Length: 347
Ligand SMILES: NC(=O)C1=CN([C@@H]2O[C@H](COP(=O)(O)OP(=O)(O)OC[C@H]3O[C@@H](n4cnc5c(N)ncnc54)[C@H](OP(=O)(O)O)[C@@H]3O)[C@@H](O)[C@H]2O)C=CC1
Ligand SMILES: CC(=O)N[C@@H](CCC(=O)OP(=O)(O)O)C(=O)O
Image (cartoon, rainbow, N blue to C red; front, side, top):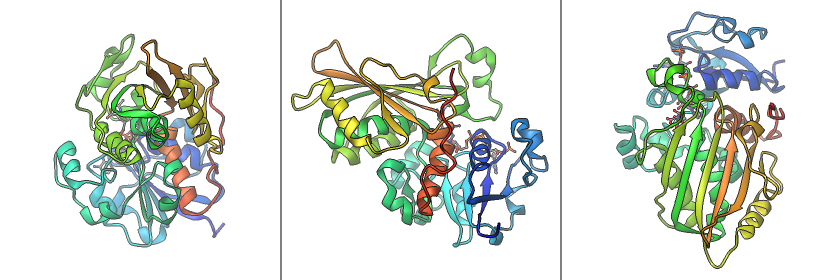
């Protein structure tokens, strides 16, 4: 079909790239015309992802082998830090969703502080739209470059942004205790991700100093209308997929935990991918596995005046590739759920 969008995935041999291929294989308006890799360039998709080997798709090539004059749209799923110059070199007609952290932080000084170098494409950064889809549809629809949010920031912001916008919680007292599966660290071989280092245990990392803290604070500060600093601690779990964020909050203005539930229920009542669990039901990562859904839960804390808001998503889907496809659908005015209708895989 000639009216399909010609789409390239940069970094198609990685976890989020593979997940993009899986989702987009069911997208009627998309034709995957280029897939790139670095070390694995020259291999077929069947060699790098046997579960996708039944798809008849192009062999993986290096980025400089792609003819971008024949490409309409790019998903960029490269490691953060490698992306800015690649996107800056793309022809203007190509629209982009970038899954890395390279264009997420609006403040260039904050970017340099957390990522250890000056931004390499500051003009593009100014134009990039932060694509937390449920809160940015208008801007995403008009964007040339969408910065897809990080997995932890998506989870935390979907839980907390409506509560801050409505003034239901105090902005000065937010603790986000988050757990992730190991696919969040990518497919690259690293000692920290070996079975022997991850199985049968759990550990915190980036304690008090994780680069997703400023990204979360950027979104929450905008929601509150004032600067916010959060206590954010990520943990690595012995599972392949999923994020659970347990958010400890202080109620404001005499609100009760049920009032928080009412705010979230109202905010997400028309949303296809964000849901509030029934009272007393604790959302689990296995309730969203393989799907683009996020489930929130609200519980009273035993400490008076406080509540616990839980948020689960699949880091590779709503936390990365799924939200990226959702953003592409918004950019082209298509049904936002196209190629994202899969129900969660349970158990
Ligand atoms: N994993 C997750 O849950 C999430 C990831 N992200 C972000 O998405 C991006 C991709 O993540 P993920 O898929 O996990 O990463 P992976 O490490 O699994 O994959 C990285 C991909 O980039 C390619 N690549 C690596 N270095 C270069 C380079 N110098 N030039 C060109 N291509 C290169 C790799 O090719 P090859 O294998 O051939 O070397 C591979 O295809 C990252 O920025 C990540 O932070 C965002 C949200 C969640
Ligand atoms: C488990 C794990 O390692 N998770 C990654 C975050 C996921 C991710 O890739 O986020 P970015 O897109 O911002 O890079 C981490 O903590 O760095």
